[in-house]
Length: 84
Image (cartoon, rainbow, N blue to C red):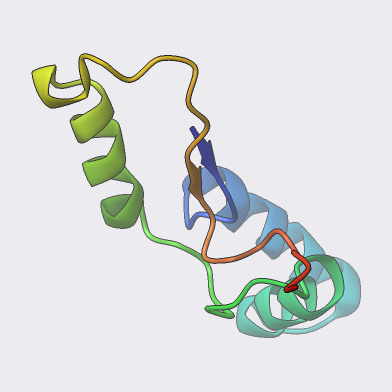
């Protein structure tokens, strides 16, 4: 599974450091990071742990017993793709 920019203590710390370095607010740091580093993130926000947990629970359950070698992106569209 590949979660993207999820609101966690780790990303909070990253954004606090960015805000301090830029002399702005944490919100400004998050907005700037999303614009500069995650331009394809369709939902334009950090994900919440509650949005990742159901995927983990499903994959860890008997319901996913036939799933092997799958790659699940829980990323709000952060990976750019080409529409054909």
